[in-house]
Length: 575
Image (cartoon, rainbow, N blue to C red):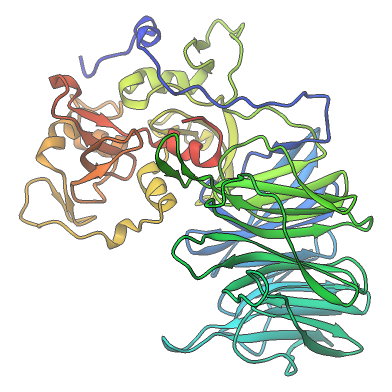
């Protein structure tokens, strides 16, 4: 027999620990709650979102070094997430005049404009600038963009950049200059604000820098950055960011300024943790015409005296401003970082962040794909009782033919649609403990009808580790792969070559092993896994091998729960 087929009864007898998905679901009838919008690629880090109206929005960001734009449409009671365009450089902010008239700015001086004919790049006078802010007026006949020129050498400082769009051309605004950056700008009527390392006010055709209070209290300066600014009226505005005190025990905390009565005042806001050693930052801000506001960001819980350890996991944070106070909002996920928010009105909003995270407010809270479901009436469906998820159709057949539970683990989601960023198309996917299945109907009838995610690469990227920069192996070593410059460790070689996908070859062929695990992308090294065990570890394109010498012979090599780690980073599953 080529490889063991995993019988259903065996699957259900194996004990399960710590896999139950988080199921913090709101009543379906309550629309005034936050819900998770699924569909974006998990490799996208969104930086900006703009609601055209309560049924259409645009979001931009970065995906593995390139810029990306998505369109969101409210259809048939749910948000449809559509990939729209790749760009050469990351995009930092988007604004929309209409559903089809869109502007965005990004790194390397990138300014792009979309109309009914599609996207095009727009020439501007500082092509090397990093542009982080844009606002357009009317039908797009005037606008402003801001950012900074990166330093040319180490000790130099970035230089402020402000651009003005008139008569079909972008020109540099000379009245705002010097060291620093502009992270955001916003106008209401004839009054505008720009914020970053400093704050500037625009009125009567000129920009003037305004004094700020000390970021860490009276007569106590400390480094700070304002990430965004919003004008509420001609005199009232808010600017938010983070400050970083200079001391051994001080941590990143929110920096919130409120301008009223002609002066900026430092304001405190709640975060998700009362621990003074927890970190937190606010990164996005939006106000509607009624003076209701939303602020988004992230926090961690700092030092946990019960566990005697730091809980540095990043959690999303949303605060709502009404009746002249900021209050924390209840969210449907526990992990993740939000970067931007847009309000259509006090009852409709969208927030975006890292790992493809999109939250909506005012549209109800549909269950996450990771939420447990009841037993299906479909006699062809396999219901996996320990996790409350169902295997059906082509995914069930693929799971059973190719190793089942030991290779892929339990299903952690139901089937749902998600965008593949490489292809720019939506595919049916399902997450298991160790892998993500992706259904490609265009390959129906071939062994590649179901493709596996490159989760080894994705998790390393999620950890901020570039596998292409890892030290290379010895080309003379056994089981060396010139394609990646790494050799499979002797402890892992037998497992790698004896397991593979079912592609119809005799035994387990090289191409079948390669299709299941991919090439090695690291040398073996001692690493601490997500369970806290320090073991010999080697990364592959689609897997992480771990060597546990004290286990019985068949279980000395275990596969890391990579897909569970991807979902945990989104806040979809518990520890």
